[in-house]
Image 1 (cartoon, rainbow, N blue to C red):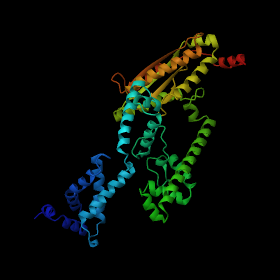
Image 2 (image 1 turned 120 degrees about the vertical axis):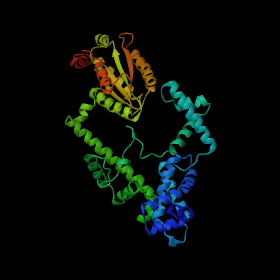
Image 3 (image 1 turned 60 degrees about the vertical axis):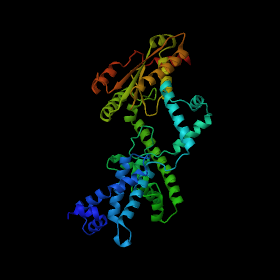
Image 4 (image 1 turned 180 degrees about the horizontal axis):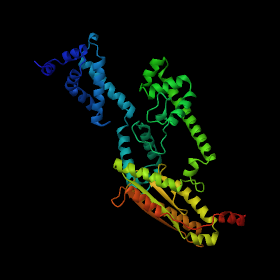
Length: 430
């Protein structure tokens, strides 16, 4: 009788034979037979994560069971494997999401609130306020805030999730040079190594065990001989301390580069505080390539002020600089933190909207209205300044990445304004 037929009748026996002679082909037979066990356990957790992902994690638990099984313990392999498969899936879910269940009434209310918020965002072109959502659902504002707060408490960040610009990445950067991922640059490893040396030995050890060896707080407490509560306290304290260290180091580096006239001075426009025009082209090129490779879209909004010549005639050339500074501040307050605001010419801006397709037109319409009100209230009726916005999306059949950038370069608004006029205007005003 072949081994596969023998296996069908005596699965426990083939496990014992694998333990005596751990051949890969026999391990495959174990995986095939106990696949039903893995799928049954994974189905118990269906709905929390994708079924296929849970099955794959379950197979890891099955492999661990096969390698750790001791026949002398007096427990059947089927029973032992069931516990390890379930434990591996629970461990995975613990890292991916909270196991706490919201009450049924709160889940229903959360669904209503989120659905209404999404609909209102599409209509308004911006994120609705809690008061607006509450009025639409005839609820109190505090009820909407409570729902969103409870929803945030249920979230756990994924290590596989791409980071946006406004996300804190200190947790991903933990560890000294020997623990840092190979993808980190030498400069990043040096910064991390220096930051970690400023932590206490126990703080360093707990962070490495938790984030790199994937031990639970209970396992760390057992290994180090301390309580679970103390482990939790050390994790919070050390992460906060490390975050402060990294922020301080980044600020020191920024000041050094500014003093030396380095990269930071070139990237940031000194007049408005937004990114310089050259950065618009490099950032949009990067996002366009990413959009094409990942099958998503990126949008760019081009903003230009028209009629500034009349503005100069009435108020002087320095008014243009004031206009750009105030407009930059208005834009920063009304776009996402991950959106990139840059100068575009000397009387315009370009905004890169990563992972934004058709909704780029909604954002453009909202900004058009805001900027129009801003310009009319500021200068009318003495001087008339008009605001024009254009929206471009990529991938677009009419553009390659290079032709898109060349087109945007050609659209950069340029108005001849004397360099020293602003200082003369300020002296006259004084």
